[in-house]
Length: 177
Image 1 (spheres, rainbow, N blue to C red):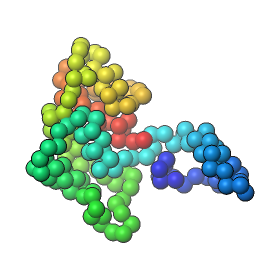
Image 2: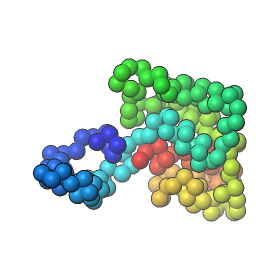
Image 3: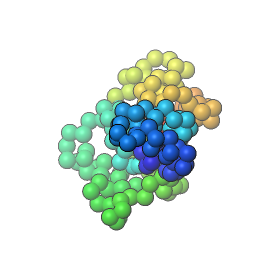
Image 4: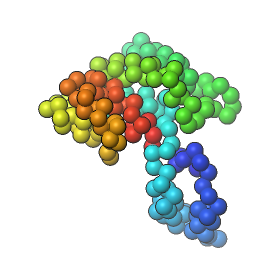
């Protein structure tokens, strides 16, 4: 359940999945039932990604070079500030999930980190005219579409690719799966 949504599936959904799995323990039928269930599609965009997934995703997408120990230390410093240092969870239960790290205290930190990563990364996919950059950044980040609110903010920043990327990786569309 925690790979799709923070909310546990309903009894009806569980019944459908158990029935598909059946006495023969048919994994193909279980996965087909799971991925085609309306509840699966309805959960899209509700699971907040964590700081590690966010940071690694931005670094990989923008092809930010991490060549030295100092580069890695800077990334670890960002994660520590966000409260999710790899291999050091606060308890045996791991880190808090969901919106816990989307506090107002971390907004500035995420924007600063995103700006630095955009400055260091490869933004060549955003070459071209400013109006099409909003679509190009969506494609680069794997975003199907922007909400009207995100789109308006991103269009205002389209003239500056670094600012555009820093804002885009902090939109609800990027911060949720």
